[in-house]
Image (cartoon, rainbow, N blue to C red; front, side, top):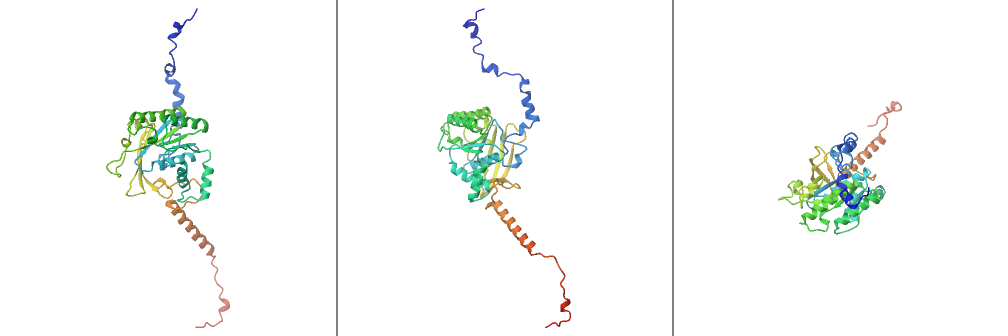
Amino acid sequence: MEINDNDLKKYSDIGSVQRKIKPSSDFASEVMDYYLSGEKLTGAKLPIKLFDTKFRLRPEELTVLAGINGAGKSLFASQCMLSAMEQGFKCLSVSLEMSPKAQLARMWRQASLQVEPTMEAGLQFTKWSNDKLWFYDQHGTINPKTLVSVLRYAYDKLGINIVLVDSLMTMSMNSDDWNGQKQVVQSLANTARHLGIHVILVAHARKGQSVKDRLDKWSVAGSSDITNRADNVIILGRLFDEPEDAYLSLCKARHFDGAEMDLDLKLDMASMNYYHDGQLPHRLLQTPPQGGIMGELERVALTEGINETIIRKTKRPFVPADYSSYANQSVRP
């Protein structure tokens, strides 16, 4: 039997649509892994321990981190990357607003808990972060297509797990280009899912009537598709009349039941670390902290240790004195 072009024509358009329609049984093993093998809580933990059993920066997801200017978004994003690196994840920072030099200067402080990191702390950090941390060294703006290419290259050549994009406003588009913003967020979300990486996208929030007003996911500036498409949304805020007081709101966690919560935080200005009451800033290096709450605690502990050593060295076992040789001697007034 001869097969002609007309016979084949009706089959030529069968492509990805038909191949992607699958029975539910094809996904059974994946769902078992999700529930039985702990996949639900895979990914990088946040630097706030209260989220350890509730939320993770998981592969294939996009997290939007938003706040007004000066809230500390980039600072907290840096803290998240350091925490992820400690857990063995490889991170890439694509910051068009801060140079690698400025980012590293802050990371040295955050990792060492030193307000003025010593050379020893810097050398320790450089060794500790080797093969864990990369920077895309460009300032200004970036084309969204180029950004996706950078992410694909970093994953393919470096094995990157987590990417920070700081920020949405550095994309080469107008601030009122809602469709452009939607396309960027859509591209980042699709790339994260396709590559199995996690992307943190820093975005700005609209200013309320007062800096004291608490923000929510509706406060994110720009297109509503920014938060609609994101898997997770974290809002960070500062109470500027009390510089050390801040708050964090995990206001969207699509794949986590009951993870959404609001937390009051403190900012250790010396080490540039956010922390929750009762859970002090975490030191990643072996150098002693200097300045800030941890430096003060270290100083007090060291002082107490010195005092205890002095007391211990000056103490002698009590031996009753022998006064027999003086028994027959007169006592002069």
